Image 1 (cartoon, rainbow over the protein chains, first blue to last red):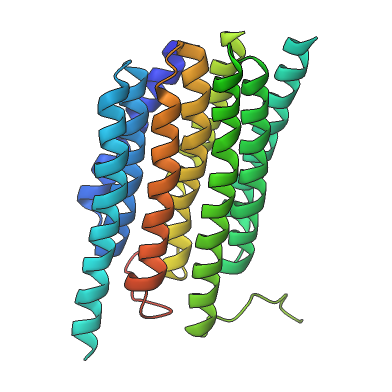
Image 2 (cartoon, helix red, strand yellow):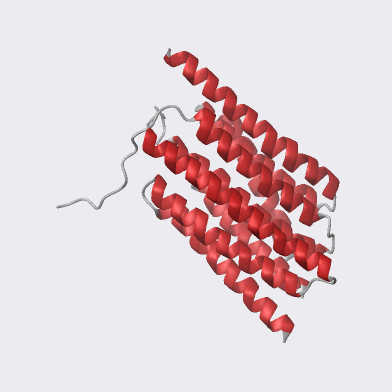
Length: 81
Length: 100
Length: 92
């Protein structure tokens, strides 16, 4: 059961990474980047590295995601005006 | 007995998570999806955490597990309110059944 | 009993993959953001289950951080990023 978990996790990580890079819509790419960060958190914790998982959850998924969303808001607002 | 109750709670939690995911995939608009996500998923999380807390080694560990739940409830309520408020301010119309 | 918690974690991961495959569908940006919020709330459950199954209590702290920062991303989306209702999307 552990092997199935790891295999599915690795496949989902690679799939989300590829989708993040290949998506033309920038907002969707940011969403997929957040999803990728969450999956990477699960990978680190599955590798028994809770400290790196903590850093990834805080920096990778949370703060960078919020900053990128904020940047999109600023860019869209500037385009509109 | 405690193991049995814990397993039952874990299974109930898994069912509610499943319901939340199905709702997110199948529901038609923002408001109904928020409804599925905010309620079903958090109930599933509460059941899973209660099931895990029954098996915790110490009282402190069990209380820490159970403390995650109010935090997630408050955060999810705030986020759901913010998104629904913004959707209404932007004029996203609620979904209605099409009349034939 | 760690078989049970690992099995439930596997089931939740299958849920996540199903949400990922159909991920980021329209019609509004909020529908796409909700996928990220689903990953946040399900990820907290998976991390708590993994903490029990693998015997690493520190993973509970990771779950707490994840819960907090997923909420911050959601608030940042609602307050700062969402300006228009329907946006152009080429392949919906």
